[in-house]
Image 1 (cartoon, helix red, strand yellow):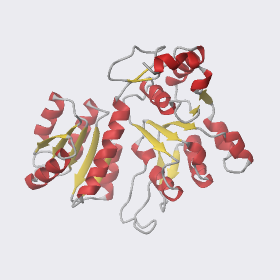
Image 2: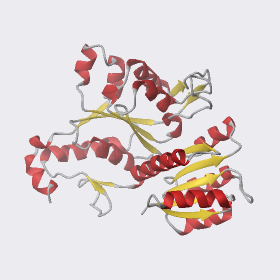
Image 3: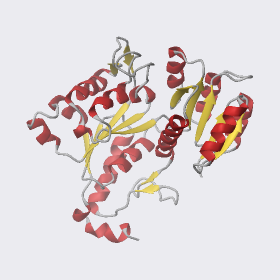
Length: 325
């Protein structure tokens, strides 16, 4: 059962959120001060923290710093009734998964909690690889002892320690995300954020704002500044899953991030600088997309500095028995 800590001195709000999230099957622990919250975090494993920015004894951002120092992979969502751009930006730079302005709707906080828990799970849950680590009962496993899979494990080991961009190729269901997580977990950035973005699942009109964020007033409905995934993932690792489905305009912004580590939020003039390792995956033939004018050749060569191709099961049938036991 996933454990959520709510830190707020508003007893009514704590009761409301606790009841709502408990009904969804989460174990919820309410706290009403910064000191109490830190004691709970030190004493037991926590998957996600809903942290108010104004507490009677401590500032929420100060508590966030302490939590992230000792527990870098826990997802923290800042709650505030006094939201300012500066507070939001600082919270994200200190490692918050996201922030939410009070008052908020139950559906809004529930969706954010689900996303935060998924991000924590991806960072926390180990991926066991025979050539690198022993299998663990609570880990996801890349299974296969065939020669072709052994070559995959060797490549993961070779690329994990460096910050080189890696293109992971393979048909759907071959385990591309597992390989990306294995690279992350064996890298120097393993204690920093890891986010996976499915480019095919997000509408083209929303993907750019999801990745790079936007300024208030950038478009209809943009009533506040929003931090994108690249800023959230500063000093960490981002997986752009199914990058072959990304539009040419978004590819251009990705290329600039790869070349310069810079971008602008939608509707903004401020240049944002980030240090993010980029992993990508695709089940499409990018070379054919280039010929069709649907994928940029310049970004293709930046992405495939190192490439790992996962074989379909039909090419290593000797692993079927292990996969089915």
